[in-house]
Image (cartoon, rainbow, N blue to C red):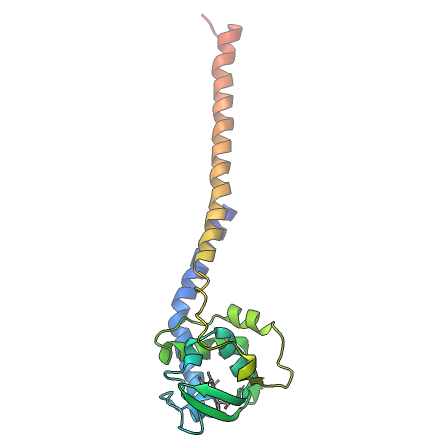
Length: 207
Ligand code: HEC
């Protein structure tokens, strides 16, 4: 019973995760457009401002490895960087929301939105991914430099099938239950067999 409850609630959680995507995009857009955050420099259209702020639309960095994006947004970016064939050598400060560093949830929402909106539907960036990528150590100088990042044209590894994970857990939870039912069945039939055979052997109950 507990196992069934567990698997049902795990399924429900995975459904909530799937539905949350639309909500994540909405939260991401709201943050993106917040004065002082991304749109201020990269523009609401993602086109940037030539010579000053690189574009996010048609940027190989946006569709490239998530690791780069998480680090750029978390720590800021300095130094020379080539974006869509143009060179920039400027400073993107660490992003702050109302004076506070962005939380992992906010980074996940913003990047999910940016990659959806300007990255031709590139995959979402989950909170777990942000957490994992940020355990890899802080940049020595406070901000990251393009030279420290992965080549933006590195093909993305096939996305970890995040949705499948809860299903695995479900199967694991259901299986022992099936085994349990089998065992009880076996036990019951042995008792039944004993009840039938014993009187036959001992002669009890014969007219
Ligand atoms: C104050 C202006 C400013 C803000 C605010 C800002 N950026 Fe940037 N961003 C820059 C500049 C300037 C660069 C290039 C830095 C360099 O030359 O090293 C850059 C580079 C980038 C890049 C890599 C190059 C590219 O264009 O693809 C990404 C991705 C990026 N920013 C995303 C964001 C996101 C997401 C936000 C909001 C959380 C944000 N930026 C907020 C100014 C800004």
